[in-house]
Length: 311
Image 1 (spheres, rainbow, N blue to C red):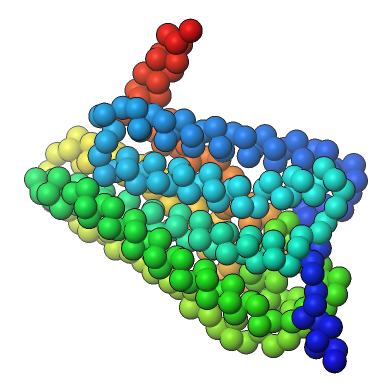
Image 2: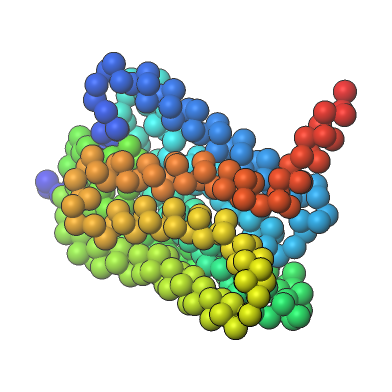
């Protein structure tokens, strides 16, 4: 009978980043600013790539996909938090929480997969430059993205289906600012062993294996560059990887550092770490790619000039 009552839970309560009423306006303003900067910055990257024929290459095709995913990624968590702060509420419906988990895992996983595909693209461009256009043809690029979406779809769906079998006590509070899988499993009133096992499996599929793929690609790139005698040639070849390496370091440094650091299990540390890879990283990606990439800067300049000429 008690378990039956647990299954009827209709909502959760999100603890948020701070309980201090005086800090709520500051948190609201800061996250609203970061959200708008992220959406605007990534939209500009997408528009620049779509409008400039010089950027219609595999590298920028994957970058435009990454920018689209980043917009969706931050939109999964931040708007709900902003609404809750504005209306002085902490609740999120049970269904809304499951939906948030589902899309959060999809876009978080796609970020990692796209960074892996982009590493492979850089490997082909540097190690097999004469065959680059043949290998990285539009069909393969589209197929790589579709395979990524297919894997992410099923992994996220299994997570949600496994969560539906869990029971929760009425008034359950999630010590986070969004429905994060690890924190939800901690507050479940029923046994979550199967969920935890699949969490480790999905972390390997969505996080560890893509990172291994990235490291392997760059090991081959470094090995290839070592055979180039000219220092200028080495720098020119590796300079195309600078932006990608920066984004990879930022994303994996914060996300894997959070999940594999035992001391980060406390709610405050978990929330701060999550902010880094769910909010800060998508916000910085457009700046990293635009400031370090002459092609993107040129496309943004031409886009701005066309906009200025329009009445």
